[in-house]
Length: 511
Ligand SMILES: *[C@@H]1O[C@H](CO)[C@@H](O)[C@H](O)[C@H]1NC(C)=O
Ligand SMILES: *[C@@H]1O[C@H](CO)[C@@H](O)[C@H](O)[C@H]1NC(C)=O
Ligand SMILES: *[C@@H]1O[C@H](CO)[C@@H](O)[C@H](O)[C@H]1NC(C)=O
Ligand SMILES: *[C@@H]1O[C@H](CO)[C@@H](O)[C@H](O)[C@H]1NC(C)=O
Ligand SMILES: *[C@@H]1O[C@H](CO)[C@@H](O)[C@H](O)[C@H]1NC(C)=O
Ligand SMILES: [Zn+2]
Image 1 (spheres, rainbow, N blue to C red):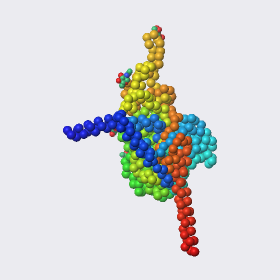
Image 2 (image 1 turned 180 degrees about the vertical axis):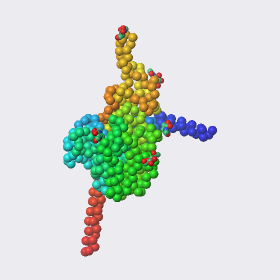
Image 3 (image 1 turned 90 degrees about the horizontal axis):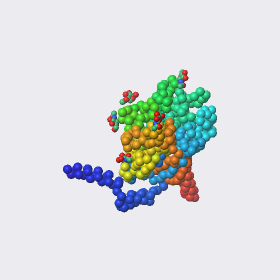
Image 4 (image 1 turned 30 degrees about the horizontal axis):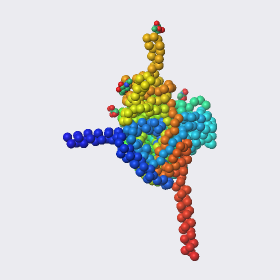
């Protein structure tokens, strides 16, 4: 009886707490934030390790909705408690609104380039294979820089490992679609598909961790769908990967499912390749029906391998299904994926030393998700906001300004006088809380488009304070490079000073 009472009061307190409106509640919230602000210190250490999480398509509204979904309006996601943050302007060299290929290149290689190209500068137009071969057009990524500095490097993604966000870490391609040979058009014979670049070229062949999907780009196969990839040249790049590591006498491990990833021995693995699906990895909410590891499990495995290097490491983690779900107009799936990425952030935070690890959470671009007025505080974020005073029909809290046919909720109504009017479907007759509910969209396209708003960058650890206002997206590369190399300059300076002091002492002692 007592325990039931305790449980009930805890439930009551925990739900009522977030809906409190008394002055003390607001003052306590603000005091906690002020304490944090007053105790924020610059960490001037070297960034021995760098971890960058990219929530693909995770614009500020997606983060806000994730926060509401996880714990209500006053909740704070783990990365929302990082001491430093800024905004990134995501436009590309040629477009006001970017795709993931050019925006990831900006983040990781430090210049803005053309939409749909990967790791080549803005002088390379989409599809210009020949120009992309010129060394001076090819950009060097943070992963390549880390390897050159003696660090380990790798990435984890829920997408194909050859997809637009991880691609710029290792590939140079005039078209993001050239992930596999079957997708290389006539006239591009001199160019190498992205999968081959990962396995055969620098820096990809030296990556210590490669975890994600996209098996069909690596082994003889047919495309699973029009968006997927296929290998038509009868090569098996997974065997090639193995051959390369064997020839170089490296300790490697190749895994293909959750069980194998759970059993691998990090002490005996310096190179880990895990490809867990033919195409992209499944959405988190459907993953339990598969033998695919979670993003958190992949991140934990990656850090175990990478942190063995005394010189440090670079890790990129992509929550790619946030973007996939937004493109389909499934806000709940997108936000559920964003929550899964936050879980992986927490897993990573628990494994690293914040004194020497620059930890960044950001996004490559937004989507056109909006949060409409004026649902009651504490409402289900996937529910109804209220009824329009114009047509009397309810509308949902979340909507998109662009969408595919399934997101287009308007229909033509013809009355008894043959007069036609365009009407909006009534969401209160639909299950808006269903995973695959398509929120209403205003402009009908083939699929939801990206948005052009700024994305947020949250940072913690060495030189995290370099993110402090409205930045260009490609500034991220330069700030991370500064943080990564700062120690060297500083250590050199220190050792020069030290040598001078020792020399002077010697001089004094001699005389
Ligand atoms: C696949 O290879 C066959 C045989 O070389 C060729 O005829 C076909 O055009 C190729 N298909 C694609 C999509 O590249
Ligand atoms: C995992 O992959 C290994 C190697 O392909 C295979 O032998 C094993 O049956 C797989 N496990 C499951 C549960 O699918
Ligand atoms: C997967 O999770 C869903 C939702 O939690 C549940 O309904 C379903 O039974 C689970 N499936 C399996 C195979 O565990
Ligand atoms: C409405 O249109 C139909 C078909 O075009 C026509 O048969 C009908 O008479 C019209 N009704 C009125 C009220 O105009
Ligand atoms: C709007 O939705 C609410 C909650 O689902 C419902 O109670 C109300 O009747 C709906 N109002 C209209 C005008 O459809
Ligand atoms: Zn996208």
